[in-house]
Length: 406
Image (tube, rainbow, N blue to C red):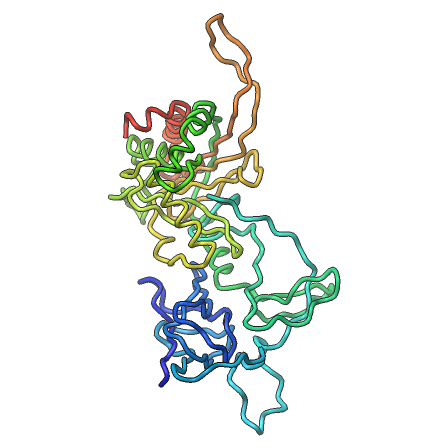
């Protein structure tokens, strides 16, 4: 008895994608729920689990464009599996065509020079988002479909991701086809640049009270809620309060009209191997710090494990990106179009500042962070942008107001 393996629905707006890589080889024994293949859409890469346990048969090779509901293989529920060589990933050719070369997706590609890749952050990412990922992260190699090939020569890296045809450029470098996700990133970023009048305003925030509050309650908070108390929840909460005071910042332009949202859905950028994605926290204004931290941790983990759904990356009204986790001191984030504003957080540095003390002004050292608000100047004037960012600063510098005014 066999069970078909079909391409599952991963969101209302998704009708097709690329079968990026098989994570098991033909003939392998697989368990129900184990990772089976990766489906790459224009919004996210999703790992699809096995629908049942048994022996895997593959009918669609990695790198093939597929549609939702299409049968890409089957599982023999009664047979006993034996690991097959990697060449068995694609259907075997007819005997008369045995001498033909294997398809590009099944051939090993030429090795490429290795390049270091930064480790992903715990809560957010560095580059400015564009609904889905950022252009700053390089494409990551997919996990091997079966047994790994022979080790490449010293000083080189593994082959490009499964399904990515490789070639050689005129200067001897390697050419690898852009993924569907990466092409969509490029399109969205260019769309944001062409369609908006972006401007950025800056401020800095003194995080001493937040640092003190976290140090005092972090252990108790983690025991009570099972999640660490980070910095991101303070900024999400501060932004929702500031957006409630200045709803124009969460609005966007459609044709000749201004559209005000009916929900406070805030996106938080997360760095993954495939690039930057922006999962959306639904109803962020109604969540407390513990609920925000739990939502951020869950979305970030599933985004990195390729279990995030495309629908969870859409519909936000405002976004936050944190380049500080990679050491960025100051940057100008790009709008997550069609949103009209995005907040950029940066590295925390201990710097001397002037404060009013009992004896007058004094110079003290405080943990300081630069903030950047990029906004669409077609809709938001400088007064609104500066005032909004100042309100975020006020809430974070006096975090007790997050609870009093929520």
